[in-house]
Each structure stands twice: as structure tokens, then as C-alpha cells.
Length: 238
Ligand code: ADP
Ligand code: MG
Image (tube, rainbow, N blue to C red; front, side, top):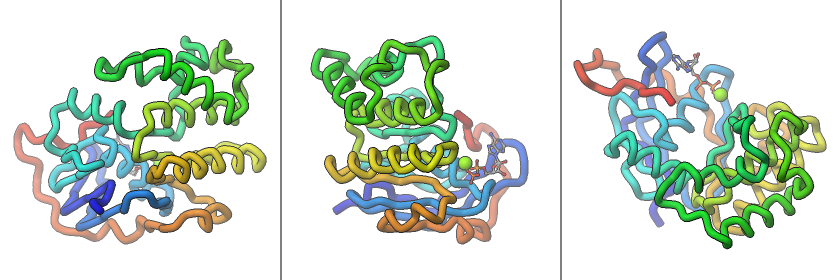
């Protein structure tokens, strides 16, 4: 079957700074779990952003869920990401002025192609129940613990039932109890729904749970970067 992520000849750099990421080829098979590891600053978050279509490479192709994200317009990439990719950001990115329930429902509020109906609301409540935050749905994120915030972020990421779930250090700031809770949620979801889970982590303790480990130390000495051409998109940031 087609991989859920296929990358070819990717070269990326930010507008500022010397960081460069070169990936000649990377395929992530459907229905697998993969961990991205590597030292801080090695480009793990950058690659998640490229896979999700938040950023664009200087050259190369990124095909995510069969869609060549590198050839979409900005607004198409945004809609694609919200509808098709579940993202758990490193800092959760909850909106402080929305209740927990409305944070979970957010993808349906910001993408016109997604319809917020009864079924979606029921699904949001089911998810909240599974992760034990049912009694927090009317609260605002400021009144939650880190572990609870993380669980809200996970609910939001899976609500659209994406075939690809990207989680950026999902257990980074959590105590051991919440760490395993959040991992269970991610892995349970991936298993139950045949979703591919890609998680950035530098936690040796959890690596065993992943079927595949992608080490970023291999991605640095690749290819020659040419100077950016006028008008070319270079690492359009989020
Ligand atoms: P990791 O997630 O592996 O810690 P990142 O992908 O966040 O690494 O960052 C890779 C490198 O790119 C780092 O050196 C970081 O400082 C740099 N970087 C990240 N974001 C930007 C940006 N918006 N502009 C310029 N440099 C950036
Ligand atoms: Mg990072």
C-alpha cells in the first residue's frame, strides 16, 4: 500500500540562520508507529511541520496521505492539515479564551469543509470521557493541569479522525503517571483506527513502544543547497 508519508529530495532551511535539513528519501508506512529521535535542534519539529504542510521545503516533494502538499496553495495546505492531519503541538497550543469543549471542537470551527453536527459533538464527548476530562469540558485551559491540557490537545487532534497523527514530544512536560496515560491514549487510538502515529521524543523509556525509530542524525550532510531563487518559498513558517 502507499505510504502515508513519502518524502523525496527534500531540502529545507529557514529564512534566517544556518539550520538545514536534507532528506533524500523517507517513507512512513500506513498503520505503523514511528518515533523521531535526535538531539534538540536537529529538525524534528521542522519535519513534522513539513509533513503537515505548515512549512514548505526549498526543494523536493512531500506527499502526505496521497496528497502532494508541496504543490498546494497556502489555503489548500491549511485546509488539508486541519481536515486530514492530527497534530499535537509541543506546547499544546490551546486557545485560552475557549472552553475545553470548544478547544476540542476547534478544527470544525475553522475549516469550512468540516461540518460541526450532532455526531461530531457526541464524538468529542466520547473522547473526553475516554481520557477522563468529562467534568472539565466547561473549564478554560488556564484552569487545567499540564496533563489535562495535554489530553485536551490529544482529543482535538483525533476528533477529525485523521489517518495520520503527529505528536511533538507529547510526554515532554508530564509526570510519569500522565506520561503513560497520554501515551496509552495515542497508541490506543492508533491501534483502534488504523492510524499512523508519528511522535517526536527523546525519552528512551518509551521508544520500545514504537515499531520504528527514525534517527535525525542521518539528515544533515545531504546535498548542496543552492541559493534561494527570487520569489521562491523558503521555509514559510507557521
Ligand atoms: P528540534 O525539534 O529537533 O529540537 P527544530 O526543528 O525545532 O528542532 O529546529 C531545528 C533548528 O532550526 C534549530 O536550530 C532551531 O533553532 C532552528 N529554527 C527553528 N525554527 C526556526 C525559525 N522559525 N527560524 C529560524 N530558525 C529556526
Ligand atoms: Mg522540537
